[in-house]
Structure formats: structure tokens, C-alpha cells
Length: 272
Ligand code: LIP
Image 1 (cartoon, helix red, strand yellow):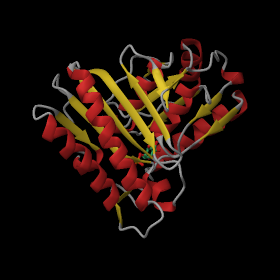
Image 2 (cartoon, rainbow, N blue to C red):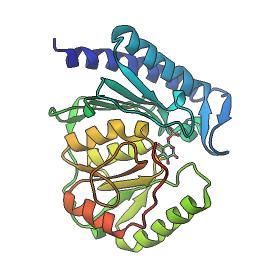
Image 3 (cartoon, rainbow, N blue to C red):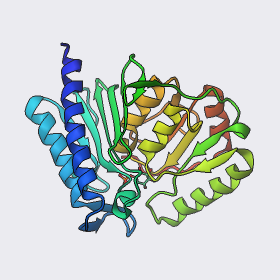
């Protein structure tokens, strides 16, 4: 077994354990705390799942590093080094989790030398396990998945999010892009989780996705899953994706990605 095989085997087992926690807690009373604003939520389950993942991985791989949503302080600068680094959103779609809406997931990616090697997004409520390893394709519940072949924005279903920021400038841009895109596309959809939105593109159920204001932990796994499913992940202005920029655009094809990028009104949050 290669080192990467060992990493994958261990993280897959831990993700299943994390899923069991989410399944058990989603319909129980929750201790809900707020972070950057009154709709940016965190629960004890977010913290419990992140600790489960980090403790489990660090006990096996002592030299690995971690970038986790709940162990990163708001505004703290995040440093991604060449060391094997797990980028973790323990519960992506926390607002959905709080309300019991079954679109919520664990999202975890492994980067080595800053290159994504493993991506896993697991919705334990709907039993959707999205996985990818570099160069080995993307899968849903171990069945291969592939993006659509959509090249035209006018025929595309686009995923986007309202976000959990009440910053007036950010909210203005969200509404402006809804107004700009609505007449140009087949439809707009939001699941409340960037990771799941990206997996819908990888699945071929949506054709594109973009969001301003996300963090590396929301997209690290989805980036690899989309690309291993044959799609493309870039910066929303059309350049290369920067995990720390808090900006993402993914699509089934380069043509669609570039057409979507050209249509968007841009927003540049402070980097992670
Ligand atoms: C969420 C993202 C979503 C974004 C929300 C929030 P969380 O992650 O997945 O795309 O719109 O603002 O950041 O906070 O549920 O882990």
C-alpha cells in the first residue's frame, strides 16, 4: 500500500465516523453560536467533528498540518506550506444542519506540496459520498461521475450562494449578480453548501458554480472532485484558482467558465 493509499484509507474511515455524528445530531437540540455575524453559525457538532478528524489524522500522521474552519480564528492569516495539509470544513452547510435541512456535509481535502491529492465531500443524511484522488477520477458512492458538456451560459444551470455575510457591499454584489445572471441562464440554484454545490457540477447535475466570500475549507475538496470529474476550477475573473482568495468559479467546460466569468460583477474579499 502506498502512503497516499494509507492516507485515503484512514480519512475515509474518519469521514464515516464524522457522518455518524452529523446524522445523530441533525434533529436534536443544538447549542448554536455565532461568528462574524448573526447568520454565520457554528455548533458544538462542528467543533466535535473537526476535533474527531484532526485527532484521528494527527495520531496516525504526526507530521501532517491542518487548516480547519473551526480551529481558525476569524481574520487569522492562513499559511499553506508544502507539508501534507488537510483542509477541513467539518460541517459545510452549518445553517442547513441547524435547521435540519438535509443538504449538509463533511468536506476534507489533502494537499501535498500545495497540490490537491485527496478530496472527499460526504453528505451523511442523503448518503452521498463524493470522492476523488489526483489522476484517478471522481466518484459518487464509488460510481464514476462526470461533468455535463455544457458550453453555453444560456443553457446552463448555475449554483450560487447568498452567503452568511451581512456586509452591505457583499450583499449588494450578490443581488446584482442574481439580476445580471437570471436572464442569461437556464436557472440558478443554491444548496447552502459550497462543497455540495461544486459536487453537483462534478455530478453533471449543474453546469457551473461561483461564490465570493467562501474559504479554502469550503472548496479544497470540491476543487479536486470537479477537476477529476472533467471540469475546471478557476478564479471568478477567469484566472487561475487561488484557494486563499475567498473566490471560486467551477464549470463543466472552459468555454462556460470563461463566459460566466465575463458576466459576473466581481467582489474581492480580504484574502485568508
Ligand atoms: C458555508 C458555505 C456556503 C456559504 C456560507 C458558508 P459553512 O459554509 O458552504 O457556500 O455561502 O456563507 O460559508 O459556514 O456552512 O461551513
